[in-house]
Image (cartoon, rainbow, N blue to C red; front, side, top):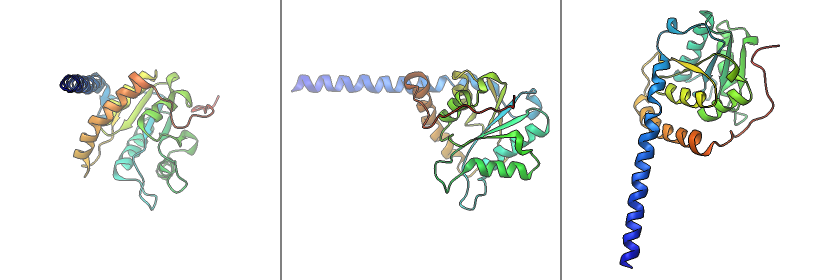
Length: 217
């Protein structure tokens, strides 16, 4: 019994060390992607597509402050001639909840032509959005700028680049957010999960489907 407990203790210790090592490794992979994260729109070269990530809509259909800032930043990119198309990716997993249609409506109301907005209704999480951006929308063939808050962008760029989408990021932090500290804590675990998904498991998104075109041919 003592020998069994000894081996159990040793096995548990090795597992904890492995887990801590994996957690540390998963964080370091994201550091160099911060070099491709920009805060000033003037630093963004002329590209093809802005990839805009969903961040929640309220029950009345209004965008959360976080999402509003992301869409406004994408609108600025378009108005400055930095991109030709906006690909909006978000959650439409339930009939009564539709992030991307709300994002599109907001952008159209501010002057973005409808034909230059493309919607990904199955971007349920960052991994799915990046996977589908390549396999469904072919963004690995274009020059891409990802739009999100600062805390989120290194994980986006890490995931997209591992799917062959060469991208840079533009920070959409236009306000101080109530849950900013909570996001930072959550991001630590989200990066570990992203590392497992990209480097170990490579799961398929919840939905794939037929290919759609961002640009008309």
